[in-house]
Amino acid sequence: MPPPNAQPCDTISRSGGQGVTETQHYLGPRRGRVTVTYDTKYIPDHIQVFRGSTLIAETPGPVPGTGSFSFPWNPRAGAPGSELTVRVVVTGGHDPRRGTTEWQYQISCPGQ
Image (cartoon, rainbow, N blue to C red):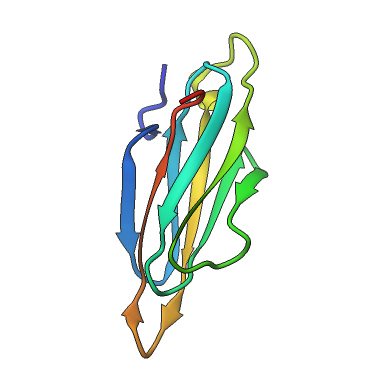
């Protein structure tokens, strides 16, 4: 069962602004490849995916524009909902000439 604070996979997360935004996503018990597709617009932002405290995937530093990256999802059998989530951390950039950063990403469900 998903934890109450976790967003489902295959939803778009949007935000903007300088600083750090953290979002929990429930990926569930199904194994497979997970893809993060993003659009960080013009001001570079850094996107990281953590499982617990372990970094499992990320953009190659702050990046502008669109792109994607993926990682394998192999949860252990019978794992509780809290172990079936990842934490996505977006560190928003800042450019005094262009204003506040805007970004969005979507994290796919495993095996899709």
